[in-house]
Length: 109
Length: 109
DNA sequence: CATATATTCAACCTTTGGGTTGAATATAGC
DNA sequence: GCTATATTCAACCCAAAGGTTGAATATATG
Image 1: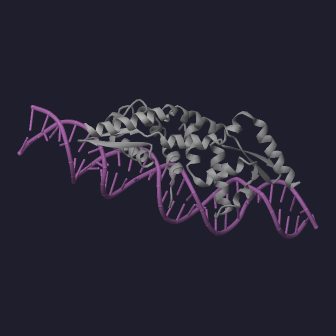
Image 2: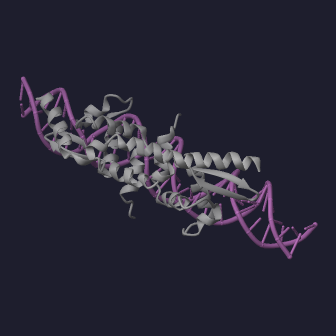
Image 3: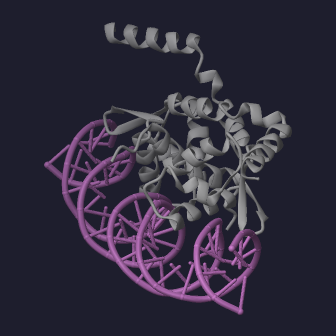
């Protein structure tokens, strides 16, 4: 099983807790303990979320003694942005959609 | 339970089959039957995927007799692009170079 | 050394996800 | 009206996701 970058990145970011962690990390690296604070869940739950982000490459970890420093790695987000940008042309013109719809319909007539 | 737009959109797009369906729909609307073709899975499986995309707002369905026309609605993708763009500042070459510089310098300390 | 702190690991539970098969439903066409 | 086609619905299976608790492990600090 491949589970490529986009699969893991999209899946990781589908959870609001993890998006909030990412947002937090955009302001600077933090320890796992620091990340727990805003959430109403156990330390272990947050630790798991961090691991999911790490596996998706969204976050990188550096150990300094007993503390783990978690830092944002924005590359997968960049990849997502790249993926999404392929649909930019659809964002402004509704006409494209209509045209495409009519086109496929005409073929079958 | 809220399950807002981004949750559903990210989750829907974390599956490669569904991203492929989205890509296919970018070329024009299609029936569910048409969407099955490239995949090695049952019609029902694809039908389920379409429903997931629909629930996420990535796709809209118009019934014409017994045929359902599935068309791309790019708005959630736009939302994702908007979300991702908040991290653009991390993507710049300047910051990449700065980071690399700091990294190599720290090694010498 | 003894203890408090930062963290993972492991087992478990419940819900969700992706897939299957077998109906059921609705429309199209002869 | 009968049959083929396009689709959903429902039940089921198994794996993964998100959470919990209770260790274990490693490092600071008095």
